[in-house]
Amino acid sequence: MRMRSVHEHSAAGEHELARDPLPPGHAHQEYALRVHDLWAGYPGQLPTIEAIDFHVPAGEIVGLVGPNGAGKSTLFKSILGLIEPIRGEVHAFGKPVHEARADIAYMPQLEEVDWDFPVSVTDVVLMGRYRGIRPFGRWSAADHEAAAEAIERVALTALARRQAGELSGGQRRRVLVARAIARGARLLLLDEPFAGLDAAVQHDLLEILDGLAHEGRSILLATHDLSCVASCSDDVVCLNRRVIADGSPADVLTQEVLSRTFDRHLLTLGPLASAAHGALIFDEHGE
Amino acid sequence: MTGVLDWLFDPYSFEFMRRALAVLLIVSVVGGVVGTYVVHKGLAFSGDALAHSTLAGVAIAFVNGANVSLGALVAAVATAIGIGWTQRRGRVSYDTAIGIMFVAMFSLGILVISRRTSYTPDLFSFVFGNILGVSDADLLGSAILGAGTLLFVLGFRRELTMVSYDPAMAATVGVPIRFFQYALLVLIAVAVVVALKAIGIVLVNAMLIVPAATASLLARRIQRIMLVAVGLAAVSSIVGLHLSFHANVATSPAIVLVACALFAVTLIATSRRRAVVIKAGTFMVAPKD
Image 1 (cartoon, rainbow over the protein chains, first blue to last red):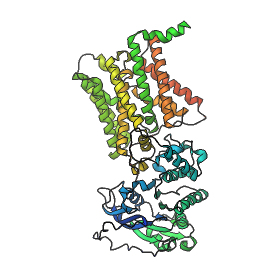
Image 2 (image 1 turned 180 degrees about the horizontal axis):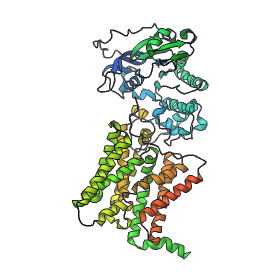
Image 3 (image 1 turned 180 degrees about the vertical axis):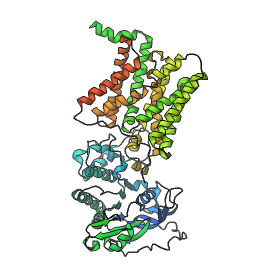
Image 4 (image 1 turned 135 degrees about the vertical axis):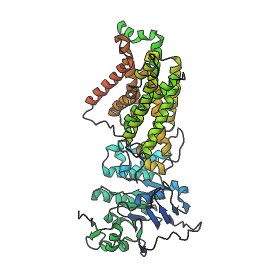
C-alpha cells in the first residue's frame, strides 16, 4: 500500500475559477486516471461537483466516499464522458478519457440494469466485449472465450446459461464484475459494488477486486460502505461536491474528515483509521 | 380424412384467402419479433397508442386521396418520435404523456372523418380490420416493411439488447443509446402499420403483445422467445383464419381470441414455473443521476 500525505481541501475560499489549466501532455502514464480541476453538472443548474482533483495510481484500488447527492454519480458520468464537463480535464493512461474508452470498464448500480430483460449470464458478460457498432456483428470465438474466463473468475460457471434475472443480488453483482473483467480494461469504475450485500458476499467480492488489482488493474469504486473502503482500498477520496480529503484510509477516515464529508454527526466504533472497522452514521433525525 | 383436408385446404382455392394467409404470416413474423421487445420493455401501452394514432394519418390520407397506408406510417412514426421525446424530457409522467398523444391523434382522425357526410367503408376496414380486402399492393407493402424491420433487428440485435438491458453501460462502450431507443419505438410503429389493414387499429396491438407474452412463459432467452412468439402468432393466425372462413365470423377478432386462448392455457400450464413480466414503462427514462 502506498502511503501519501493527506491534503485536505479547505471548504472556504476555493470558489475562484481562475486556476492554472493543466498544460497539454502533462498527464502521467503511471496514473490510470487523473482528474484535474473538474467542474460538472447539469444544464441550467449550479455545478454538482466543483474543482475535483485526484488520481488513481496504476494497480491501486481507490474508494470514493460521500453521502447521497455528493456528486459521485456525476463524477463517474463525467469520467465516462457521458456528460460534458463545464471545465477541467480527465485523462486515463495519459490520454484524454474519450480516447481511452476501450481501456475503461464501467459497472453501474444494480438498479440501472433491467434484470427482467431475458438474457443469460453469458449474454451479459459478452456485452463487455462490445467494440463499437457493426451491423450483423457477431461475438467471436475469442469473445466467448474471454467471457467464459471472466465467468470462471467470479465463480459463476455453473450458472452461465441461467437467465441473469434469476440470480441473487450477490450473484448479479458478480455477473456485472465479470462483464467488466471480460472487457479486458485496465481501469474499472464500480458504482456502489457493495450495496445490499451481506458480509460474506462482500468478502468474496473484495477478494475478486483484490485479485484484479494485483494483476495491475486499477479500480475506482464509489461506495457508502466505510468498512469495505477501509479494508480494501489503497486510497480514499472523500467527496461532498468537492474533494474534502484524499489519502490513505488511515489518514483520511477520521471522525473529523468524515463528519465534514457527510455533513452529519458521525459515531465511529473505535478509531476507524487504525481499526478499519465499521462506522455508524447518525443523521439529524437520529435514526 | 378428406373432410379434414378439405377443411384445411378448401379455403385456399380462393385467391383472397391465399393473400390473407400470406399477409398474416408476415404479420406473425414481425409481430413476434418486435412484440418480444414490447412485452419485455413494458411498451404495451405505447403500442396501443401508436396503433390508434394511425387513424389520423389514415383519415387525412383518405380524404386527400393519398395512399392510406403511407398516411398511417407517417402518423405512427411521428407519434413514435413524439413518445420518445416526451419520455426523455417530459414534465408529466410517461404514461400520461402517451395517453394524451394517443387521444389527440385519434380525435384528429375522427374529426377529419366526421367532415365527410357519406359512409366510408374503406376507413372502417382500417379500424376493425379487413383481411379479405388486402390487395396485392398491400401485401407488397407489408412484405417490404416487414423485411426492413427484420433486417434492422437482425443487424443490430446486440445493440438493441444492450440498450434494453443496461443503457448506462451501453453508452459507455459506444452504443448510440438514444438512436436505438428511438429506433425501437419506430420499429413498433412500422410493425403496427404492417398489420394494420389485416387486423385493424383496435386489435393490432394484440399481435404484438399476446404471442410474445405467451412465448415469454415458455422460453427464457430473447432469441428463443422471438422464435416461439412467431410460431404462436402463425398458429393463431391460421386457426383464426379458418374459424372465420368456416364459421363466417370476422377474422381479426377470431385470430386474437385464439392467441389469447393460447396465452391462457400456457399461463395455467406453467403457473408453477414463473410469472410473466409485463412491466410499467421505464424504457426511455434516462439513466438516473
